[in-house]
Length: 489
Image 1 (cartoon, one colour):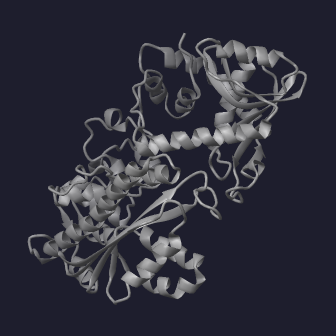
Image 2 (cartoon, helix red, strand yellow):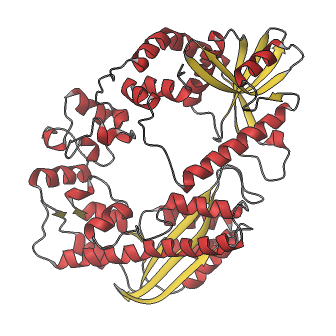
Image 3 (cartoon, helix red, strand yellow):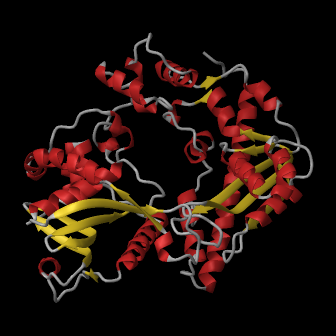
């Protein structure tokens, strides 16, 4: 018998079609280094939580032992005061309970371990599903809690400093009634031979199967309108509008959304009459700056809280004219320590002269201001750097739009459209998530000496590609501004 797990059930709450596809393994699986590292960290956090219950028994999978019978025997044994990783099946459902702690002879306290730094609303659904299956399995649970990470934790502290407990008993009991009321219908729908008919809703926007479901064969979907608010999405859906060309003329759009709509309606590229002036405001010499960083659940270094973003490298190109690079600077951190101060010092040294510092997005400015807050003696110099930053992505979004962008403006989306020969496909590390995970694996001591050396070379190449991409886009926009064939709406 195939049992329904938590992922299928939670997906059903959002979309029965998604749940049906999930049960049949028709959802694209998350892959790549970033996913591998997330799995590693989640497993690590769960095992650390188990250490808080050192009188508990951990249920381990084994070819020789039926884990469900093992769990059942442990529940029945009144000498057992705690069970970690307990597995249950009941009435077509399957769950793995992180921690069960006996409160008296006939009752348990359920704990679910979460790697977030605060108790999120969605956690109530997670633990309520586990609670429902435990109830169906005739396990009496009287209390429900989440263990999430504490921002006060630092490396080498006692393990009990790592977690904060939040009691969700009242919320879970309310949610349980809802879950029991839909559990039979949910089993029927998900086990049906016929897929539930999908319908457009706001959650479709970020769905993994959108392109083969509600977005299939739909050209210029309303989700291509950038930063479309939830109320706006719901209003358009209520009006049965699924494509941009159907958006009513009197429907309120932001200036950027209106640009996208006009481009779709006219099938033309938009160029504003202010593009040339905005480009002229960028002062020579040009500095093209890109950062990479890593954010891990467990701190990599002392005096760092969980989930802290740590800058790990930068790439910097200096040019007197666009495309004429005078100098290339690059830095990658020593993975054995927090090198944010060294990065700040190198930036100050490399950016002494006047001239605009061109970035793609506002994240570099934010990172520099955080460094300024962190290092008081460097604050003045870093603040002076921050005010020189020009966000090239913002200039692009305000002044240029190609219908092939489909509402996106990320550097990896627009670069191959503007300059088709320039892609990231030839790089070993080709995106920021992979870059962060690669550095994290190094810092965790999971690569040997040769792997470390090669990975750092690949990281430097990736970061340098981002600064080169900015130069290409800058040059492209300058050429557009000079071309009288382009005009705004």
